[in-house]
Image 1: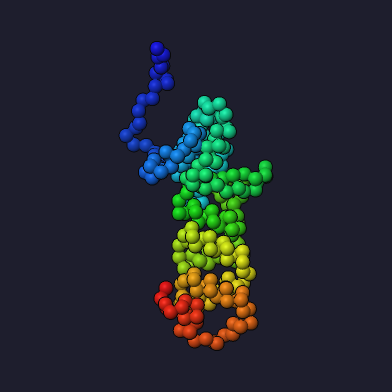
Image 2 (image 1 turned 60 degrees about the vertical axis):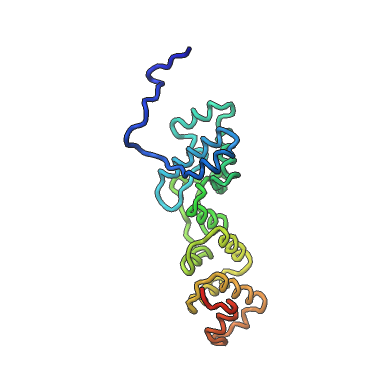
Length: 237
């Protein structure tokens, strides 16, 4: 029988100390689907490091995790070491527990990981669309390179409200389909009419694409007629 020395025996948790919050849904929905210990370890370490960060953009790289005291020993106890960490992070992304984004840094492409929550989903959508640019060499304190003009996601948040994943997909599609000036003008026209509705803005863009901007003459349609034209019979929001 092996006897543990006093140095290796865990003495118990303190009454008060720092804690990492893991949502209950992780235990019921994600953890039963994890196929490797490396995936569980990767999620726990990513959660801890991300929750210790401040600011709107919180993410980690594999090297951030590997550099933590205790993390390297945890993964090296598995036969593949660092590869177990990389595979675990990839599995968490496949299960949508984490969100992965590739950034170009001094050493080439580098993956960064976000917890899959509403705030991170909005950030990732904006990064993938090109509206926000993060520097891979400054991921511990991510740097946003500001745009000279607001992108479609900022316009939506300023004029309409919170971006849901479904709306985010439609915004990405619209941004790739219409000129930037059209998108800004469509939001501006909706704002002038006090209409906070993406369907209205989308129909403006579709109409301009079909009929051309030359058909849009100031004052041609009265307010109620424009609302009916783009929103149908329902004039509400």
